[in-house]
Image (tube, rainbow, N blue to C red):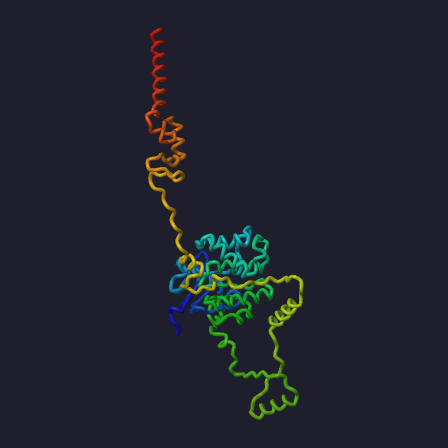
Length: 404
């Protein structure tokens, strides 16, 4: 029995029924689904079209409300904000802004997770190198091929270093070489402790990646277990040896016949078509001197390697960096430039622009710069001159009144 703390996604009797305008039951997309996804495993949802895979993923992401049953992610509801910060999602179709380039796309999604500018720049460079898009980082996403859009979609899903990664048809539209690189990346993420839920129609992808698989049909769980449990044919025994000549093979079949065992088939083992294709391509690449046409991926982004609760190297360097020494303050009454003794005139900071404008509009002495000279008695002379002008004007008005 698995520990409840190791359960990342758990459902009990989960159901989703779509109804028409009159609230009549139209289709039961998911019915009585009970699954448990453990921490650090790759869990596969397998089934034909209309089996309820996408509906299940949408309920896990909180994009749909279940009709019945219970659903928990990290022990909380799927619509919890703190839970969503720990999720990464690659949808079946890459719904990205076509007018943004790869750098701007990842920067935008980094902003949604409130990452500072330096961290966004660092992660963007690592992710673009990891998915093999460093050479097309400044091309608009709308100009990307389907395979390149899947690559930038994977980088977007990893920008927040999620604990739970949900991938819907991750290798759709990719050539076999790129698909193999993508599967290697997913496997490395799983080894780094990521929990991954994978939905795909490609059985080879599920067989290569998944630890456990749930097979759905008509919204119901038909079978679940590890690949060893589901694929093993217990009633048969397979023996693989070096190539046998005719005499040795006849003797072996005679021994089996005496033991009462029937030989069902004798054939040469076959490679998978994917294995043959990759071997031919890799051999051709080693012999070729011209630039390769395939996009090679880089190393796993460094920030994705950090285990939960362990601070990264950059954070440690910031914490251990010595604090900057404060600048010595200038003693009161001493000029910073001339070093005059206390009592010398020190020029105060300029007045704010709003006070200067106000002084000009009101024609008040506040617009003058308050220096040491303005504090002297001579600074009052402009006001006396203004008063004399006013008296002179008033005297002329009285004379004019007398003449009248």
